[in-house]
Image 1: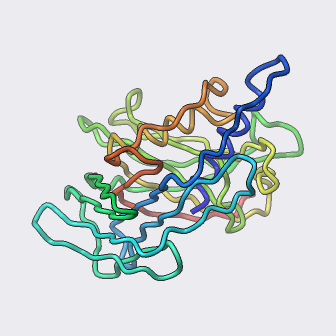
Image 2: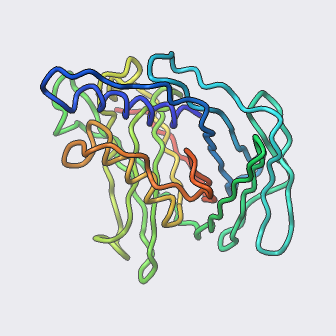
Length: 270
């Protein structure tokens, strides 16, 4: 998954640009730390957990896969699902389909150390529809914005993550929201592709095919993604001082484990 590559890229950019005077950057050789990207969803099909290691700043964005690990997920009813390694560093299980309300525990043993994380899958909030219109913020070059509509349930705390694909390519931007100010309301959220320097992030235009995945996520995972959203260069109110996002993995390492619902809709931008 390229999301974690985005995180490391953001941290690197901030390290370079946050000071105005010339300094000697002591980038060091911080490498070899385990990166876990774990997801369990309510979708039928293989559930995926990816393991890799981080690399020094001076290296290219190629993150070595971690092979030979022991990976499993268990539920609150005592069922354990072993994950089998396929492509290097990618572990999957095709028997597990997540259910809302269930708590899932991931266990990863690698390099003589065992890591665990738990996540509770929230109830499904239906993705109603998508629309597109002219972007009133990024007005140059006739850019467009895609709006996501859904009915937020009343009297329940909900958190959401949206993943945006333009012409089948996932964009770098992070979108994480809660219902603090719109609990129980019919919600429309604008998603725009910020052109922050990535060669693949060029904006949304007429004729593009846009897919939005809506994830209902629990509070710790919302905190993880919302922290990253605030730290990206085009985050709400501008970027903030970068730091590693709070993980739900113990002992602390890079990454996350998320049990979430998933649904998607696609539109042709007009």
